Image (cartoon, rainbow, N blue to C red; front, side, top):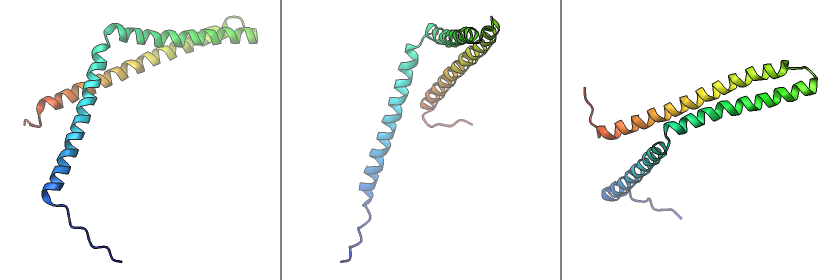
Length: 125
């Protein structure tokens, strides 16, 4: 049995298919932009400050607990506690800086997406 070759799709059918696919892609990208905008409208300066302070406080408390526990275990008075305090401060600062950079990167991406939407495909020289 030989299969008869399928005829190529007619011009209007392929055009309709491509158009529907492009519209679906555009709707999906617009939904992402709306979700991002809603997410950042809900995030205030106080929310960002709370997140950064939580990053620092969490790292500091964990390191202090570990330092105290290691001092009790090894019977080394305050030395490991002080060492872990330094590590905790460093980890807290690095975590807060990383969170702040991620926040700024996402805001810049959102601003770039908004600018692309406003240009409507027109390029200026």
